[in-house]
Length: 290
Image (cartoon, rainbow, N blue to C red; front, side, top):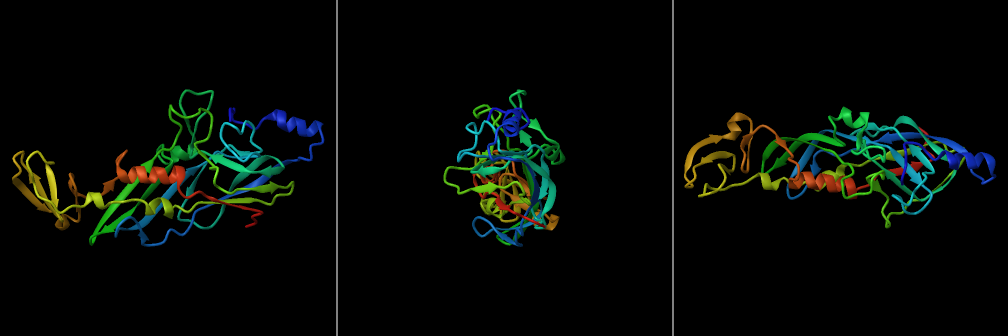
């Protein structure tokens, strides 16, 4: 979709001059999260308690064809704004109107607060993502594994890269997804609801916990359960600390830590990113009236 940030005025002008059966429409747009459950089962025997989960959502486009992306040169409906969704909040919030023309829509595509534009060399960070410190998704909570409670937080940006089509939203309806609606001239509203639990269930934190011993040429810190061992180059223990007495947890290769932050390209970070890009998609409830 080779777009500037507005719906094609040629398409709208044609509606005014030719009887195509289409009418200009503005459909109220509502956003909501879901009950994530507490605790939330994750990979292995891990459970997660989510304190906050926020998503920068938008812009959003609906297309007439079955395939979104570069084949959708002109969106039938579009919302060019972006807002932060509290993914733990089930109550819908009206955030604006999605505008365009009536008729069938067969696909969708959207960005997560960071939008690629043909007029810019780099993706543009909208206010919603700036509200999350430049991230598309931000989550914090605590993980329980092997009887140990560990606070964690993660944030990640989802945007176009050098190897992707510029000017096209990052997330699109796949060929296997079923999506279809005939937008009428008096469409009362559409609710877009996200359930982040499927993204979070894929997070595997077991690799951060270990019950090991120092070894030659091994890491400086090795955990023996909640006992931090500082290791010398020949594999002997030079110093130990009981992390639990500090109100902390012993993390593999890190030692006593008060919080786990997902590093870029770590396994949990990749799991969250894959979930956002290809995991659970939002539901679209047409005809929504609060």
